[in-house]
Image (cartoon, rainbow, N blue to C red; front, side, top):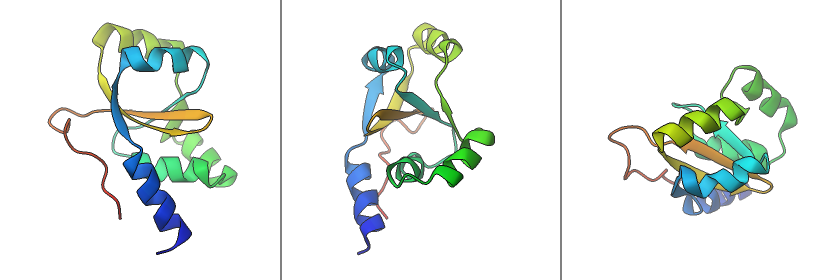
Length: 109
């Protein structure tokens, strides 16, 4: 098993479902990074954990990841969605739980 595989498994085990109310304080500190629907949350976390700046810039440019903004917080506060979340300090990466997928934890490779 490679170091990357071990890190992938570790991040997968550290994911959790959280409510917006549990993320608000992280948003207030500017620590929330949203991961677009359809993008693998763990792949995004690996990108950050491995400090892959060039690839992260590409993901930011095409919207696969983005810093959460006030408009996101207002929307989340109004709708109260559930999120999959994983911490890659100092960031908290979040992805809204999609309808019908609430019980599906990301799987290790």
